[in-house]
Length: 212
Length: 417
Image: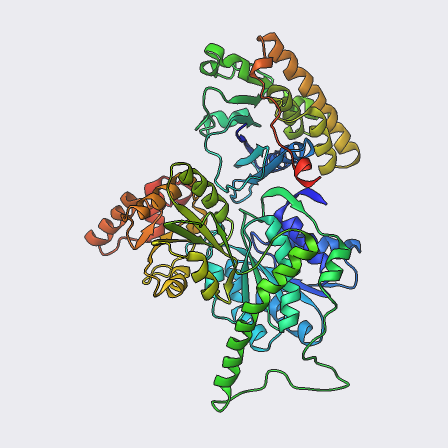
């Protein structure tokens, strides 16, 4: 099983770097090796931000940026007109866009041609975050959705990662948003047909075995 | 315990486990998360008997460390880039006075033009300051090197700088086996100063030394570095025995057996190089890589052994001596002298330019075919350079080169007219 690489796009203040970190913690909690890193720019609220996460069955040595992601998470659909979000994104990639609108409504019908439909979904992560946490920070909900879309991490591990990062009500609110996004994406994926074979099997190899 | 941690957080906790008594630092990217982390440990009481001193500059930060260390306290600081340059005079004083300060350098480029991203220009700027300079390949090694650094510094009574790539390591979240307090306590004994400022037993430290003895004092600094050359592998071996993993040491070879081409580098780029080496080995290219763990003292003999009979040595380095070429490459050339190997220099990753496996593999293969120039700039955009050279050639007032190039690249924020 080759390395699984995820690129997360968003804006400063939306928890993009934290999302990559939590995804890596979730993968770690699942027993995988993971490496998360930001795009190393100057941080400004509202400016486009990119963060990355690699997940593998064994130790990860490379320090290259991710240019051909297997998974793409778009935290802010307004970036569609500002950033080349789909650079290096191949036809097999899994794409999750934070929006209450459909891909067609977002003008992304091109991405839905052929079998791709099963791999490209939107999820109203900001609405879910607002409902469960009172704040419009969609990162945790998107990770829940991405767990459903990809199966590269488990939803239980995502919840653990959220609780590692946050405490108290913030953690529980984000965990609830993540669970609801997971259910939403699982339903959507089922509705557009046979999602199971599109999902990545869990990676082979574990740091638990290596350190046991 | 294996934990998934940001590099800065892991280093902050590791420094805390070494029980520093005085931490004094001024924040600068990409070092900031490290000292924030240590500050939080002091404030929460998790790190006891430690004073965190806020100062107005890096010059003051190192000066406070010098005073604290001379008074017998275990002292620590961290900086990067321009911050290191701003403390430069005190950097030389710490080593000149033989004070075992430990400093993390979160490697970053030096301006102008201003650039917050990673390269090794800062570490190279202080290569002759008399400090031990260790380079971490991973965040695990960064953690482990700090534990070894306090031990080495205090044993030899000289300062140690642990270099870790800014952002690439400091901001990367990956699995790190964190040592326990008991393990670190057993490895780093309480600080027993060789010299101490004590009102009950007054001495003078840092007296003026004239021509009659200055050369001898400097010679002793060199002798200390040679002693460090012995102690660094010894401490790394003790570390391996105590902690059950290999970290530190002078040089590390990877797939160098029968290698015709050997790549030499410092720091985190070694990971990407190892991936490139594995790929090339699958294609029957006989290539290996040697990581230099200790840049100062420079392990000339150990490196010569590691290079073996390789016909070509490719030094990949994240720093440039304008007008000369490579910096590490010159030391490697000295080590390889007499062995008959051709040394090629590849300048890469300046100011955070990504170093890709594909580009590395291409230059390594070119070197193997004897087609790599003596000094090569990885992925240099010749079109951009030629355009600016043409501007400079055709008009006297061609303007600021950096801004001209940014306009050519199309970076909107640099547009001023």
